[in-house]
Image 1 (tube, rainbow, N blue to C red):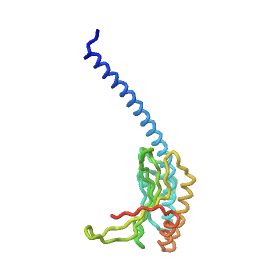
Image 2 (image 1 turned 45 degrees about the vertical axis):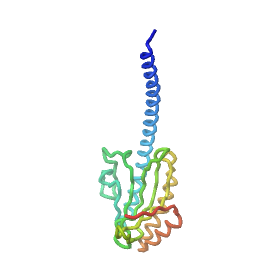
Image 3 (image 1 turned 135 degrees about the vertical axis):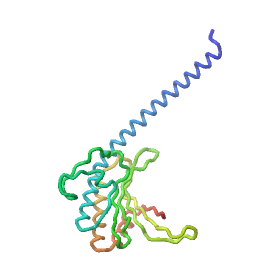
Image 4 (image 1 turned 30 degrees about the horizontal axis):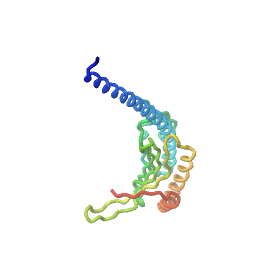
Length: 209
């Protein structure tokens, strides 16, 4: 007849074996989900970086200078004249690892420096999301204990789970924003852009830096 101590040890081992199976199943479930998310991010980033590079070039043609993240020096190898010639993806550039795709206005006039269109991949309880936002500085404010700080507004343009992203909807949003952004530069009237954002994309967050 087995001793009580041996019986107790066997039950403990059975308990841990059951737990271990549950943890292994959960591990595989999460890894599979992350793998799917990374695959979707790679697909989305490939399209989005190419799209934003086209926008960068269009503004550059009229001497409106933007910075882009990731930089073209990271993702592109130019086969012809830079920047308007043919290019291909740079070897070793990992599209799935890109967590932010951004165009940043570098224009000094009218306080445009920092105006930016950015696409990020925040996480929530359900997994990875794609969020497109437009951020700009609204001015400065003096705080009694911290001094002068810049006040920023960030409008949400598009926000959904990566597996529900509709590129057609994103392209319509880009066309809408870029057309007004471009016109505001040609007319030298930044308020055209800011008023459009406030009227059409009212979901906004404000913060200071």
